[in-house]
Length: 481
Image (cartoon, rainbow, N blue to C red; front, side, top):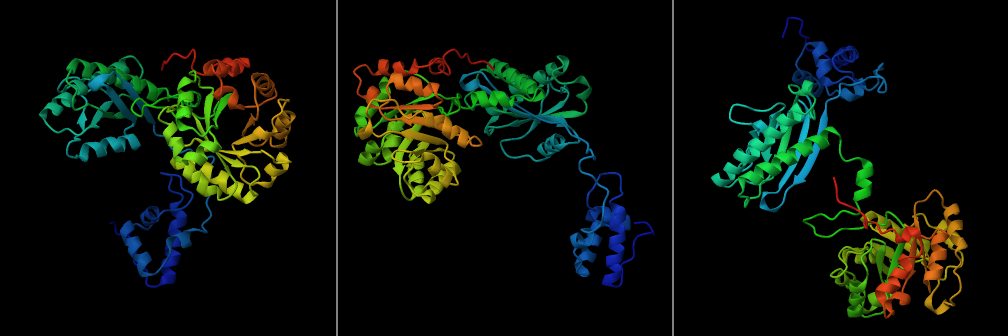
């Protein structure tokens, strides 16, 4: 310290005055814009070490935030521009078999968070996951300098040979080529670094494929990082279509109506499984586990049907009238994608039901069967459902047209809400077409399909109802990235 170091004050009042004046000057330090002085900056003005200031604060029982909280500043969060550090993320999976390559990487400024991660990786070694610099050959690293971090524990020298050989060379060559091809800006070669996480399967054996796949994956991950792939539009388009290769099944969401909901009402598990097996492939089809089926077998029947309906959206028709939260939890534990409560239930039950479903991330539907005024009922609940079902019961069916004008009335009344409208009760292809034309999102059918002698043809009668219904989601889709 210089001879101008601050002397320790003798009284608390003297210390408070000293620290207040220093804090006012601290916010004027141009090095980093501040809206409030920090202990370090204040200590710097006082020409003492920050640890000394902490000691004095404790000794004099002074709250630094309390002293500095009332200090006026000219800091404007909207006008001050802090220096931005590049922090980009890339990922790619390429190849097949044991040699498949999966790359996760960070690329950005040496002086930013990526640079900190780079330095921490080089100096924080762990058994079986020793980071190493990427080199094209010994003594020739690419630029930006790249740190390889093995994802899989290296257990023996055979594993060492794979990561320090073809994988190391592949990553380095991909980085060097990315610079040469202007994927990475050349003027950033010395300013940026890369942290690259590399997967090598313990049973991988073909060095040529290890190099081949890891080169491609690294280069693709770099391209994606620099272009900020994927776009939100890409994510929204693919998130409900995608099937993770290891998980082995997809989890659909009701992202693009209309849908055909097939109600499995007959209380016969084996018959229900046979019906599912005969359904044509279509992303427009969703399944309803009907109330009679649930009453006979319990909620576990939902999981039983999953054995033959792995990729299909499943609705549990609980017709809940009480203990809304409890029944949602039961169906959720059996993997239901949506649950149905009776609109006749008290508003408090429906609020609890919908809240719990949304908390768990599944759909909440309210069935308006026998509800005299659906609009009034919907206005009475605080938690708006994801699906409103306009339903005429089996015992009420006459074959006449449903009250479909209510569809637009509900939409206009609750135009600030996001929800789907389903129609049910004696639906046949003709009424289905009318309902779809009037704005229904989901057509619920039962006996017309489940009791048909030609089940597949019966389903297609509905799938041909409108041009939108005929447009199967993935019918013409080619998987490209």
